[in-house]
Image (cartoon, rainbow, N blue to C red; front, side, top):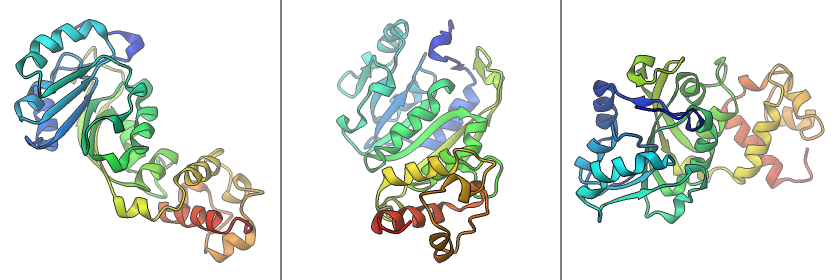
Length: 261
């Protein structure tokens, strides 16, 4: 299995892990499953066997022939292959609701996750393989060392769960880090509670701009001591101690009361 470094390829070869992923996804014939980076089809074959409608997104042209011969040709009316960079794919152009599955290249995992966040109303759930450190960041809660911008923004609109720990030897070539599979399930009620998701994103990014500084320093000029006090937020605290709900409340207050800062 020749892996291309520029695509961040590490092919999953551990059949036990493949079965665990397929069991976690539990695809049904009524589902539309979108697999990001099918590679040599380790997970793809099992997904196809479920009877679900399947869309494969693969950037590497050298893998296309193998995927067509091994999977697509079995049922071309049900299985579609897109030879494209996933970061250029408009998921809203696919028939939803979508179930996302993938072994994400570590070098683009965060941009892909934020891309999927923009389409959470179009997505049923997400099961992706990531660097274990990223899984920890996604599932962290306030006060955890791994808690930060990524975890806040995902938890603001979805429920998260770490599912499977995957060692380096499960891949070829073996990466230098441990991996993990995480489940992300969009939460419509939580998303509806956010007045302006773009503003929340700006606020969280600004708050975590310098992690070692306090909320008072990072949000200086945007949030007054009076507003912090009215919301019961300690301005002397660091951003990693502030729960997701408090970030949402602060953002909503600023959006709904533009003259208050």
